[in-house]
Length: 150
Image (cartoon, rainbow, N blue to C red; front, side, top):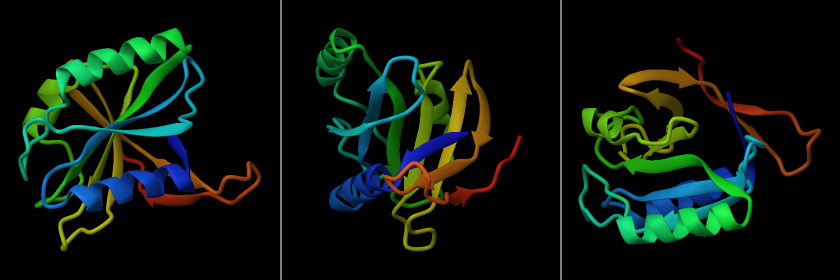
């Protein structure tokens, strides 16, 4: 299960809508090993496409080095789908290179607007996981954005 604060999820959605109709991409980072994302880092989609994303490799390398130096990790890799549901494409599955990361997909397609789903993708195997959104306060009630599937 992926647990996000409401401000983090809102930041991802805002980025997706800002870049629409192009796909947006970015990272949610947090302390390595914590499993708790704490900040949203929008990245450049060098593909500049409505149906495909590619993180700028130089920007990614620099960010991974900065995260490592700060004791942080890319806990969530996110991107948007502008013309389809929030589910991984064949390209998304093939490009998934962080076995410990959650892969969050949000839809800005008007038919599925603001659909939010998270997946684990390792070696071509895709497993959907629940997403819980909490207010900033740790005792807030969660709001579920997707159902758990196996």
